[in-house]
Image 1 (cartoon, rainbow, N blue to C red):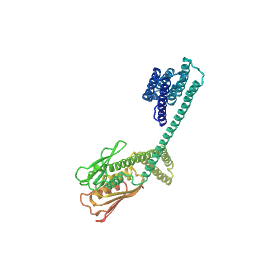
Image 2 (cartoon, helix red, strand yellow):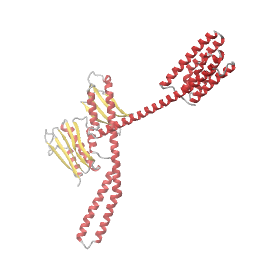
Image 3 (cartoon, rainbow, N blue to C red):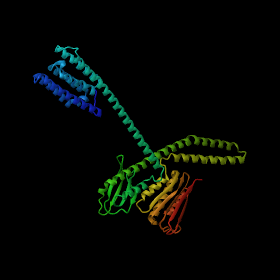
Image 4 (cartoon, one colour):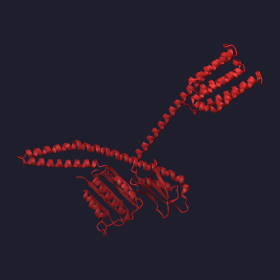
Length: 502
């Protein structure tokens, strides 16, 4: 059972043409037959049957197009009704020969070619059956013209419909192809945007939240605001504030993306302001925030995964190839030392080389362990996390750290602790309005400076009970780093941690 639907403009126009043809042929047939034969019973019955079929077509034609079996039944009934009307009003000479063109036209326009040809043949055969039953000439000019008309209607409209269907299918294919191209272009644009975001230092939640509050302040009357992110452990992390959060209940708006809540925006309205009336201005900012935070997370995950896979590959190469090679070299040196006991100078040189190989083997083992560590200890990420954790506490924090390669995990732990302590001291004790974290990191070497424009202090004269500076120095010593503190009262502070592997 073939299913067809009327949805295309050309099918609708054919539907209007069919309705016009049916009503016109019915009207002409009724008027002319009444003029020729008068108000007889045959004329009335013919008109009644024909009108009933036309009304049925108007009511059930759509169903007939959707289900071919119904359409075929409607067309066959139309042929029978037309032939009965012709038989009652003059046979082959009846004006209802025009009405008999309706069923073939319907079948050719909306049903399959097979059904159209069947209805055409049935109409022609029925025409000759009526003529023979009324003992009319079978090969006269009028009968032949009518038969030719039905055949022409079926052939012409079947081919027209085939051409229109093929054109519609091609148009659908072109629209689908165009939609695919648009999706590819959109994906390309998104990837380009992500690439540009990944290459900028502004790709961090603190800057994104600060910019969002700034944009909101241009059109929304709020006294203070706060942007928070939902961490993986479910806790919230304040990444940006504007103004000083006041007493009272703020208006809270969720930052959503892909059906997940990424964070919230809290706004304390100005006195007398109703933030509900500014919802059309707030919602676009929330959508931008959701997209930006989601992009940050996606880029971070992609970068972490790519870096981790490369680290694992390098670790495997070191473990499977370089490590065994160094171990084999060490064994050969041991054999040479054992055999060269009569040459003390050579033994000393070999033992020194053996110690160097042993140190190199240990270095390879340490490197393999570091490379297989899943948590890439990025100093830049740690600096942004520290800044986000203290974003609502006072000074503006800027970060300008160039990180070529993250340090080893053991080193990164101590660097993070020193960074955290230095930032905490500046926030809690210096009264600074600006704090900067800058420097450069490249695996086994690096230098990070934390500076502020606060009140400063005397590093040589620290109050009792304040062990932060002492702890930073101990941590620096633990990893072989140098901690330099440059500060004086009312002149701000600069704390520099520098490290370099031997």
